[in-house]
Length: 97
Image (cartoon, rainbow, N blue to C red; front, side, top):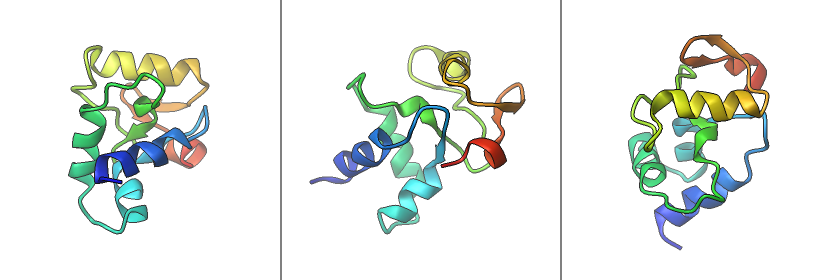
């Protein structure tokens, strides 16, 4: 399986109300290339893969999240019960998986 497919398998396992960081996923895959994880998620076209559950190392949502922007990512996370500590930043202490 290619790198992108491996990223998608991990992301599918993130439960509702939880998030992971790009770096966490990269570490699981044995790389330090968190940016490549971001490219994989940005290129995803499968609506069954919950890409909205991945944030950066500070917990910030993606400014360029797909077609809905950061507001769309935040809206999806809030709908699942993810807590935010600021406008664009998830509370990683409470929600990181």
